[in-house]
Image (tube, rainbow, N blue to C red; front, side, top):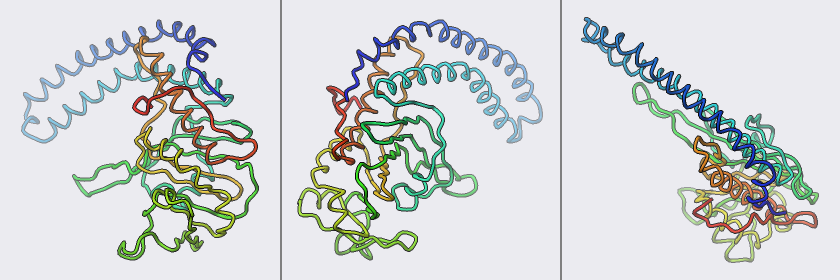
Length: 327
């Protein structure tokens, strides 16, 4: 399957985007009006505050920054809504070109719990999800969405939210029956006690032990580690020929790590790759570039999923010429 940006734009997206210019201009004017009214209201209130006895207390700066922040947020809301509408329109057209559907809203399912249980994603205190691409892709049930996971660090005034994972979670039905549980991850993540002696001989998740699976391909051993409760089946599911494709995709997205779980006849993939698919914007001149970038990003990730999921029905998607720095 190949999705070309010229075809996407020519199928109606370009005309639809042209129709949104009035909406975008209206959002800009509404935002400007709100900011002006915010300044009109805030200026006398803040002047009174700073010339009152409250100026000697901590309340004055807190109220000032809070008021300015609230006015800025109120003014930006129309722009944010317009940008979101453009993003949904562009991503929906891209999804249709690949034969799948798109939704900005996401409700994660059991695949997310499995990813958390087997260490594909880290523990977290706060989570948010967006940009779901779903349907049937090359004969496989397909589900992809972005996860943003944060952990609260520090205490008191130093308390802050820190991103511990941001990137896509991919969930696919596998084209071959299997009964084992197999984990594919970057080599060296799980090490023996005190980090000595190389990769661990086994790992355990909620009492489920997975043993290290040796691979004959040296590139595979250097780059990825494989753990399973059925070594024979694991070698069939995860062939060393995947490695080159996985490394190319990590480089293209400047991804920190890629991890995959084969379990219950399905595969779950987590890729630390930052915030993707942000195709919306207020500048009409940038629409095509934004759409092309989102199209390349989704095509590369879908190609990754199918490369891992190779069988008689699956093949790698060819999203067209691309440069890693453009992804």
